[in-house]
Length: 454
Image 1 (cartoon, helix red, strand yellow):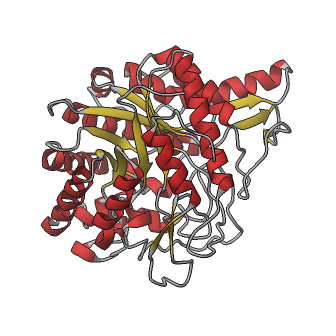
Image 2 (cartoon, rainbow, N blue to C red):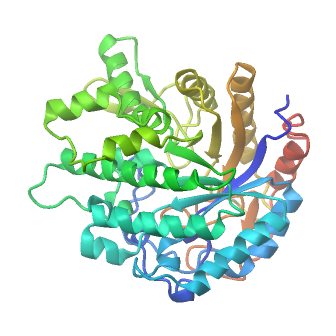
């Protein structure tokens, strides 16, 4: 088993879950600090809906060079990170030279340690002031402010960063139960919620297209359109269950349609027209979308879903779940890659995948065979899809060095490197290699040929 020689191996993080240094460079509070403890899929991590606290992270702000040295030893050839909008532009208007210099140094260190940077321009790090003043991406003014920020970042780092993601998991903005506060917005009183969501989706499509337009002025630079991918199975062969699953997948695929063709899917247009929830569009929007399409498609994949007519999401009796109730389904990734490539014929990259667990740290390490088993099966699923004709360009694990979860907890760890801190006690944040570190190192060194857990 092996991949193409230029297959990218690595990991992915966000700024707000890793950096710490909460006020350095004039950083202001971001909307991610307001996200309640419920994920975009609707799976609750616990019953505590307090606000998150990302203030200390794992101190990457001060430790990135030593961290990148560990990831170089691991063999990483690619690394996805986000720029914290609230750090580089605390008020959304003016820019902090100190913070932009930080990302200069961060990117230079990454490259020095052999990694190809992939930059996410938006990963829920909007300055809160733009939510408070304008209701975030519900406002076209904030779209313009985001584009100004994005253009400045692309101009600053585009000589070194050649792969860009405009919005992390862009489809999450349109999913039921997702927290729209992640996009700095709440539904105004008296506004139809579906119309509100459709306007948010449209405004982020416009912002995305303008990012694509800018990136394509940079030599050798490309844009990866990104979704959180959770393929929906029908609970049974009952045609109504099949239709429910088909519609759920259509709601996700409309983002691939936009990334690939620059148009709304026929299904999404028909639903908006039927329901009277078409977004307000400005003159030139549709032409802008049409003329600025992506180069690659990318996805985060953690689980599949199963749906039943009249009931929505139900448990799949053929699939086990993680401690957090997330179905573990490597076959779903293989099927998904096949389906996406058959429809859109663009290169695909898996830009997030991993298993969040409660690790037991004993004698300086973690014996995490469960993580190895999870990653092994998902990498094998990618290879099977490649063998079946899919053009997949890389695999990034989520949180290769333990970071705070999306809800600011250290209980749920994804990394192959353990960080010595917990929810309440920062300890010394020293890094330790888990058993999975040595396994993943072997996988990368062999380009996927040596994948067994020996």
